[in-house]
Image (cartoon, rainbow, N blue to C red; front, side, top):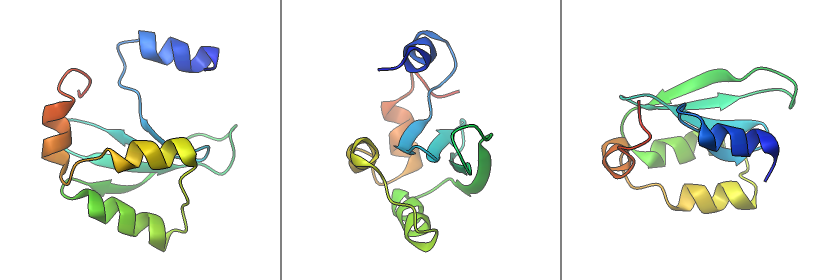
Length: 95
């Protein structure tokens, strides 16, 4: 794990859900936020907000041709059906 990842785990800031090197799912207390960037040096840009079902996130991935890497696929397979279920299960990290 890189030093940057270790530092982010130690911080009080919530860590986004990794999808691939240029896509992640951030969140706040109300919703998931799909973020992308053009390269590893670029800033993250929020493209979509999803406050309901994880299947909507997956449909957006298909529409945007976003392919999770192996770690992303594993993390995404653990998402529950709804944001509210995810929020309850992750109450210690959600804002």
